[in-house]
Image (cartoon, rainbow, N blue to C red):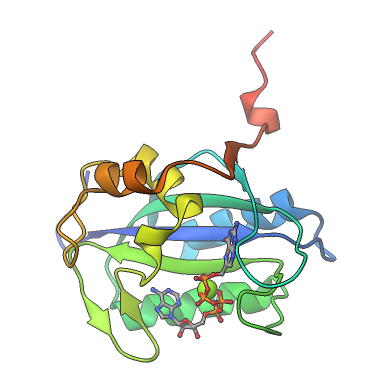
Length: 176
Ligand code: A4P
Ligand code: MG
């Protein structure tokens, strides 16, 4: 539930490189902790998915996850904090859509709309990407895209789930 002044913020995490901190899953988990600490109050996290890479050249598969947070700051401020987390987790920007230890994208922030060169909300490619829509479907199936007028459920159904599968983590192990 949201307190007064809070809005729902959905953040997409993506990782397809190992680094000094560990493997893809370690980066996803570190980013989740840092986002819950600095972007807002963690409401729910989707499962982690392993996804076929979209983009140029040969790349390893990604791990993708979406977090739902309750946030209060301006979207510009939240983007800045997301960049800080990426930098602290050793993200080096080489080429667009290239491999990375961690990518944090702001998917949506309540019904907030932006379209500047720095920040577009909702995220401009949210509706095209199964690796975002499948995890988002777990969290906000009824959320309606303010520009397209369609719910996540409809957008996810249109995109399908090709190239996106649940990633087995230790948390998924059956209890003994
Ligand atoms: N920017 C504008 N709006 C936003 C927003 N809502 N959230 C600007 C975050 N950033 C936003 O991002 C480029 C610029 O987008 C930023 O400077 C910011 O001001 P970036 O993270 O530097 O570059 P990028 O991630 O390489 O590019 P971009 O455009 O964010 O790419 P996407 O669309 O995020 O794609 N395949 C799989 N399977 N899984 C993935 O997660 N990710 C990408 C990146 C490609 N292929 C993938 C995945
Ligand atoms: Mg990005």
